[in-house]
Image (spheres, rainbow, N blue to C red):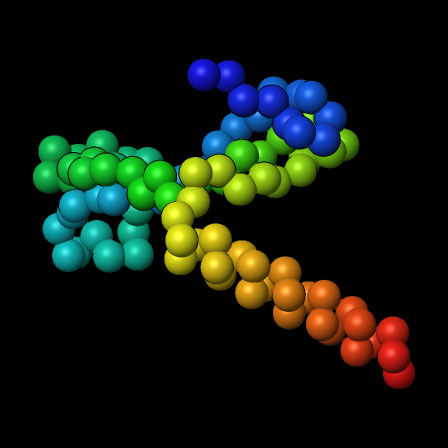
Length: 92
């Protein structure tokens, strides 16, 4: 499935959170070399966190991907807070 930017039509990339199992000694040390270790395992992807990012350097538009109820609400709250801050700024 190919995704294109809804703003400019360019091809893009996705950003998504992954689940990794690793020894506790690697906490805060996920380098490329440590990720290749035999005792580090990729367990899954949290698809509800996926965003699509436009590959066009001039655009860089980010659109929400799959999402779920909670992530949708979090993004709506952020949008409403920004709109409220803007409206408060305008009324002063």
